[in-house]
Length: 290
Image (tube, rainbow, N blue to C red; front, side, top):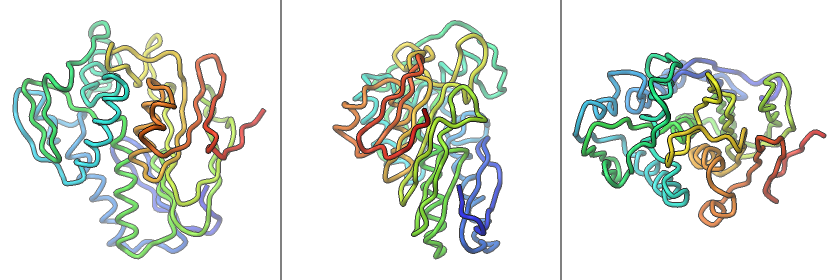
C-alpha cells in the first residue's frame, strides 16, 4: 500500500476504480492528462459503449486505425494466441456477451457457450490497423487495463514524477525508491489475504474468477477454444516489467502452463487452483500465509 504521507488522486474510469499515489501532490494539469488518457483509451477500446472506435466492427466488415501503442498490444496478444493454441484471443467478447457479460450488464445468458471465430479467419491486425472481415466483437480485456496502467505511468514520468504507484483496482505499477508491500486478495474472501508481496519498480497484476462472476459457474475468464469459463484455476498473480505483460500473463495462466510462458516472457507468478493448491515460480518473492 502507498506510504503514509503520500498524496492520492482517486477517480473512476473504464468501469473500475483508480488511485494514483505520489510523494508530492499532482498539478491540476497532470490530473487532467491522466483523466484524458483513461477516457481516450475507453473511447478506443470499450465494447460497452456504442461510440467507441472498435464497437463499429460489431456491425459488419470494416477497418479502423488504433493509437500507435496498439502495436505493442498486438505483439503480446499474438504471442499468447500462439502459445495457448487460440485460448487467449481478442475475439472472446462474443462469448462473454452470449453468456451475459454484455454492454447492458444483463448477466443473463442468451444461449450456451460458443467458441468465438478464429482470429486468422476473421481479423487482420497489423500494427495499429484492425480489419474485420465480418461483424465481430473485439475485446482486449485480458491485457487492456494493464496497458492503461503503463500509459498512466508514462504520463506521470513525462510530468517529472519518478516515484509513484498506479493502482487500477489491483493492477499496479510502481516506480521509485520506496517499495510498497501489497496484500494478495483471497480468491474466496475479499476481506482476507493469502499473502503479501513487495512491489519494487515493477508491475503486479492479478486475475480472479470471483472478480466478475454471475449465475452458476459463470465468470469472465473464458477459454477461447470453447467459449466456456475455466474451472481449474481460480486466481493468478504475475509480476513483470510492464503492467501490459503482467496483466496478459495473469489471464494466460488460466489456460497455459507456466513453463510455456516462461520461454517467451520474463515474469514471476503465483497460481491458485480450484482445489485451493498454490503453486508459484522460483522468482516470486512473496510471502504466503499458512
